[in-house]
Image 1 (cartoon, rainbow, N blue to C red):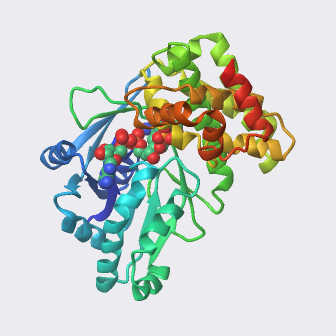
Image 2 (tube, rainbow, N blue to C red):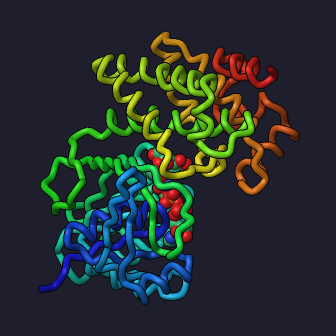
Length: 379
Ligand SMILES: NC(=O)C1=CN([C@@H]2O[C@H](COP(=O)(O)OP(=O)(O)OC[C@H]3O[C@@H](n4cnc5c(N)ncnc54)[C@H](O)[C@@H]3O)[C@@H](O)[C@H]2O)C=CC1
Ligand SMILES: O=P(O)(O)OC[C@H]1O[C@](O)(CO)[C@@H](O)[C@@H]1O
């Protein structure tokens, strides 16, 4: 029997430890596309790997039916794989999406000449409407005929991905240590080919905002405060009760917004917050504050996990003090191995805080959020 095919861009932590693993467990052959040649070679020689659960009883999932293509050296093979795929997914980082769009566009063009079968595309990145962003980059590369043909045959779906997969230090290159919890919520009103563990909803907005402004806001704030206070890992940072209280107060602020905006049940949301903080405290992996805080310029963006909930809270007349404090801590993130942290510090030095808040966060200096950030930053 011919296996169903999934093509996944990004054979990294989320690719191997979450999305690729679910496809494999659902009976798909997974072709990972990456630029990291060692990983691709290893996928093609070993054809399997293990996913370890970071928990007291360390369950191991053996992932099979996997292979890899290096998109730098063999782009034609990627086009061929897309021709045969049911799903194309990504977990490369939002900033890389424009870079992979040309190959996806080529794959779609070639596929539409050969088959009428539907293709489902999902960008599994930490950003609101990441698939729409990918679609935009792909569509502008297509000729008008392909664009029209694509409308009914290539279905782009937004999603929310939630599983903590820290930096890996395993004996075997392909193995991945992950937290047991995961949630993959995909937005569609159609009936789509089943993937074990994928949850379908008709409106992703409440899910992605709840996830991004609780899990990602909370994680990022822990990283930024933890880093400023000289902590190495997330669990170590949260052992400090003062840091724990600051993080909790921040996600309670985003919680007030989410409850009001989406009519969430306050006590259920409080339980959700406690559960997320518990996940951050997982003792079975060490998650470096530098990894979790990575790419601070992206995280300071107007639509991302710090500024957007602060602005939304402000619009609804809700408090945003702890979010402003979190933004100030983020501005202090000066990890010299993180290119965005280096650039951020350079901009702060060269143009000053007000200009950075304006240019990166899109916060005018007269905005009370900017005033609060400035107050904390100067402290
Ligand atoms: N690690 C985590 O806990 C979570 C990560 N995410 C999101 O998932 C995405 C991926 O994150 P991670 O897996 O942690 O990162 P990662 O760095 O482990 O994996 C990214 C992979 O993409 C590959 N890549 C880079 N450029 C590429 C290109 N042009 N073509 C193909 N592959 C390319 C890299 O070589 C790497 O293997 C990000 O958007 C992140 O925000 C979402 C939820 C959880
Ligand atoms: O690239 P980003 O946005 O930091 O995404 C990775 C983060 O997302 C999380 O999985 C939370 O969903 C964290 O594990 C991780 O720090």
